[in-house]
Amino acid sequence: MGTTKSRQKGAKKGGKAAKSSKPRKADRADRHALYEQAVQSTEFEYEFITTNFKRIRKRVPRVLREDFCGTAQMCCEWVRGRKDNRAIGVDLDGEVLNWGREHHIAGLTDSQQQCVTLVQEDVRSVATEPVDIVVAMNFSWQIFEQREMLREYFASVRDALVDDGICFLDIYGGYEAYREIEEKTRHKGFTYVWEQSDYDPVTGHTVCHIHFNFNDGSRMKDAFVYEWRLWTLPELKEILLEAGFANVTIYWQTTDEDGEPSGEFEPATRGEADAGWICMVSAEK
Image 1 (cartoon, rainbow, N blue to C red):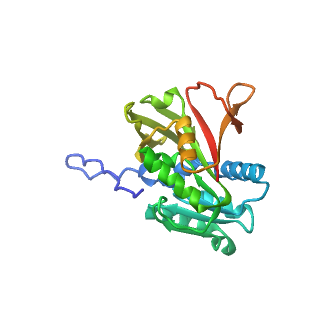
Image 2: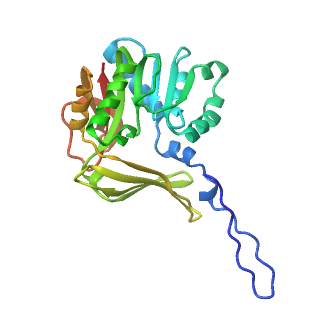
Image 3: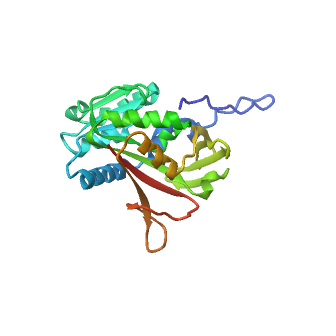
């Protein structure tokens, strides 16, 4: 986010203008850095997709494509994981790709940098080498709101995979996912705000916002805004199979001894009618 000029207090009659107020934290903060801290968990994603790929295919995956890669944090996590791993990141937004080059790829070793390729293209039509894994995390694939469009995207993903490749996704739901609400989560130095501002039950179209609040009273409003369809698990599984995938697995999050989400996901054929849930999904070619 670009900084804005700090406001000046008005001068007293017959006196001098007061000094400029201190810049607000919201004006100085970096929205991409805040997003990564509040939302992303690439260490978990690396472990999850590696473990489950090895469990299903009995081999180690090497080449990953990250669709809707944003800052390419997952690409960098991937190439740091093993010396012969390679990653391709695809996103339409050149600004965020450049941010990733400056803040993530620049921090890799020379050999690791050679193993990351960023491509500014549409994930539906991009042509890349065959890959072991395609990941589309943070619900990004939900931007395709028509069934045919989503099926075409998944078909293109299937075509991009090697013969035993796997696509990994995440999805959220629960009865609170349909409500117009705000949820706040405290982090060191800021509060992450997830706002569901609109939901249309006829089309499934929903509008969500991310805001960041700071302890000086300032707010980074609409740091990110998403308009997508709130797809369901049965719909997602059906469309993946229609797109040609041979097998789709839903991974439900387990709970700890206090009944809280554990951060561990296991294959499941039945879930719970929770207020809110997040599931991982694998689709095998």
